[in-house]
Structures are given as C-alpha cells and as structure tokens.
Amino acid sequence: MSESKTGDGDVARALAKESGGLYKLLVDTVRDYAIFALDTAGNVVTWNAGAERFKGYRAEEIIGKHFSVFYTDEDRRARKPEKELVEAEAVGRVEDEGWRVRKDGTRFWANVVITAVRDSTGNLIGFSKVTRDLTERRAAELRAIEDARRVASADSATKAKAEFLASMSHELRTPLNAIGGYADLLLLGVTGELAPEQRDYLERIRRSQQHLLGIISDLLNFSRIDAGRITYDMQPMLLGDSIRRVLPMVEPQAKERGLTLSFVGGKDLVACADQAKVEQILLNLLSNAIKFTKTGGSITLRQISADDRVGIRVDDTGIGIPTGSLESIFDPFVQVGRTLAGGPEGAGLGLAISRDLARAMGGDIVVKSETDVGSTFEILLKSEDSAPAGH
Ligand code: ADP
Image 1 (cartoon, protein in one colour):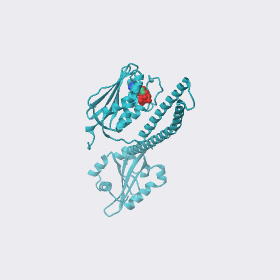
Image 2 (tube, helix red, strand yellow; image 1 turned 180 degrees about the vertical axis):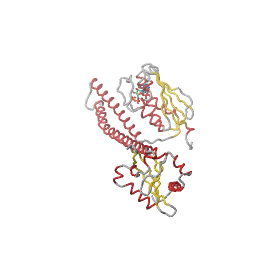
Image 3 (tube, protein in one colour; image 1 turned 120 degrees about the horizontal axis):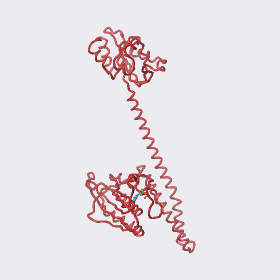
C-alpha cells in the first residue's frame, strides 16, 4: 500500500503548485474521477466536475466541510476517515475500496486513493483524493460470481441426477431379470403343461418385462452419457455395412406391422465414427419410424453426403411430428403422439440419447417432418476425409 505506482500524487502536487494553470483545467474537467484536495485537517478545499457528478454536492456546498461526510456512519464511528489520513501522512498513500455515501444518502462502491501532498521543504500541506465509482464493476463482479455459483450447482445437480439414475436402473434390473427368468421357466414347462391361456399370459409378462428392461437400459445409457462416462472408438467405417447389419434386427417388426422397409443402395460412404454407436442410433430411428407409421406405409434408408459430412437418412410415411414439437422431441422424456403399434410406450429417451451420441462424435441428428405426410431423420457424421490427421 505504501508504494506509489500511479501518478495521482503528481497531479495533486501539480495542482497545488499550479492552480489556475493547465493542470487545474484538466482536473476540473475530468468527469470519470472525483478529484479533490483536502487540507491537513481533512476539509475539502477543491472540487471537480467528477466529484460533483459522483457525490452530488456542488463546489460551494462542500468546500470547507470535513471529508468524513463521504463515509458511511459505520466507517465514521470506526474513525476510518481520520485513520486514512494518518496512514497517508505516514506512508505517502492509502488506497481503499468500499462503500461511500452521496449527498442524497445513497451509497456507491468506490475505489479511493488518498495521497499526502507536501511542499518543497517536505511539510504536509494537505491531501489529494481521487475516487472512482466502481458500482457498475462491482455489480458485474457479483453477477459473475453468482453465475459461476449457479453453473457449479447445476453441474453437481446433473451429476447427482446421473448417479441416481444409474443406481436406480441397476436396482431395478435385478428383480426384472428374476421376473423374466421365472416366466421363462414356466414357459419351458418345467412345472408342468400350460393351458393356452396361461401361456398367453406368461408371454405378456415376458414382453412387458423385456420392454421395461429396454427402458431401464435407456435410462442407464442416458445417465452414463450425461455423466460423460462413455468412450468413443472413432474409426473409419462403412455406413452401408451398418445399415445392412441393423436392417435384419427390425425387419420382423416392420413385417408384423405391414410396412415396406428398403435400403436404396449405392456406393458405400465412409464416416469417421464409433460404429456401435452409429448402429444404436440407427436402430432407434428405425424403431421410431416403425412405431409411428401406419400399416401399408414405407420406410426408406439412404446414405447421404454434404460438405464434410456423411450420414444416413431415414424417411417414413408416418404420422409426422407437429412443427412446434420438432425441437422438443430431442429432450429427455418427451413424447408427442401415442405409438401406432398399440404396444407399451418407450421412455422418450431414444432421441435424446441418439442426439447426444451423434454430437459427441462430432455429428448431429436433424429432422424434417410434416403431420400425416411423414418424417425424415438424418444422422450426420464426420466424413473420413474430414477426420484429423492419421487417415
Ligand atoms: P420414445 O420413442 O421412447 O417415445 P424418442 O425419444 O425416441 O422416445 O422419441 C420421442 C418422440 O418423438 C416420440 O414419442 C414421438 O412422439 C416422436 N417421434 C420420434 N420419431 C418419430 C417418427 N419417425 N414419426 C413420428 N414421431 C416421431
């Protein structure tokens, strides 16, 4: 605090020496700083435009008054004004940041520098005082701290949520596996012949159990992605290969629902991505297309490329998605319409997971849709050429 790094003392000294000269003019017209002089007792002797602007006093109202009027009651009781003058006299300069009071009683956050002014023989003749209004800066700082705090608590809330989902999913899986296992045993006839109705009921139990298991694995997946616990094995991969691998998995469902499922072939495009994740995304898009397309409709797959992206496009002639919901379908747990399959609903996590996976691989999922006409979902991925060095 004792080092004098700025030139305020010089200004005051010059002011003292050359009042009426250029420096006085300069100081008088400065509006962004309150610059004024105090006598050795702390009474105001000069006043500039900045001082008037910040503190609200005109020169004739304040000259001759003790500078402690600028301090809060608390600071005055603690004799802070007097102490600052003693310190400035002792070490040359005092700097302080704190609340100061305007003429109308309102407070502002100020940076204050008090410098002792001495004559050529070293006698103290008074003090210069330079005050900056930092109210705006302080408000900005407080806002920044508040923002940081909010982000930090959102982060830990996300983590807590992910951990909760992960442990819940795990706890739910164990009894569900038992339900499936015992249903299987009964279906195998280990406890004796089953009547057709019993078999039918058991199959329903089995299907519901499978369905719940699927939702739970979605939850688990989602919480893992959320917690950033997924790793990606990015490699050059043939999109056509993935399509040919996934298609047979959904063919029975499509057939059961009377839908035409086709892959418009062509040259296989190469993406740089994690193949298993791409297939997981594709499986999800195809399952949706099947769920939301009426009997007799069709689902078509194509490879696409544009700029430095390649991808897979899934067109369906299904019920479509209202324009207003196009963005929200990617939010977790959002479902717009009921499925046409009549089966149990999903958890509304499929697209949220799919898009998170695609984005994590440097890609994206985009959708276009028209109600009652159909939907187009595109998985966009980095093309092999756009991948960084190494290939
Ligand atoms: P889920 O399939 O479990 O409901 P998703 O996240 O996969 O969850 O999908 C969210 C919602 O988006 C669906 O419930 C549905 O309303 C809508 N949707 C997704 N794909 C299609 C599609 N191909 N056609 C019409 N609506 C769709």
